[in-house]
Image (tube, rainbow, N blue to C red; front, top):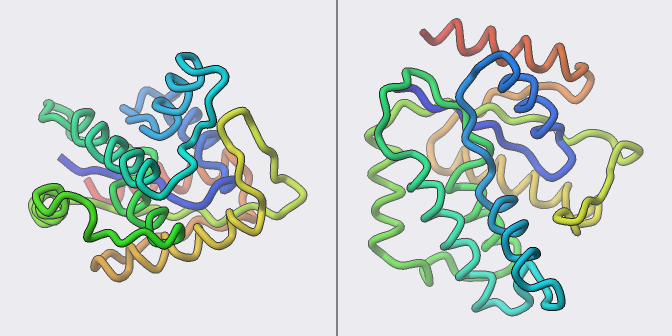
Length: 188
């Protein structure tokens, strides 16, 4: 099994590219954070979400990582494309000045073992220009935040030993999708 991680900051076009890949019948594992936030917004319409304290944000990122593991349970697919990865959650913790060692040590070890035991290809979509930046009910970050988390995430993947393949922001959604398909076909 090969896992392709589509990463990049908010407003890098991940959702658009992943939707195109899904239309082409690739198995896509949705971004856990989006699902969790949507569910929380439905449950707690009056409460602030995402969490507004460091402790709650730590728990939120932990919940995201656990959900990602759950979605990655063994299956008989040769190719899985995943919207973000454990490293992205760690990047958010770093940005929010939350010590990643506060994550459960067993969970950090599980992440390390998963990375060692699986073929993982990182595809980093460059952040689109500010004129394309839009907020949604679940995207509350501003463009400066998006640029910062994009840089932290990219550098963290390198720190974890990955060599992210960069997909240019200059390409259209169709061109980006086709480039990812070429990458997948070249690795088979």
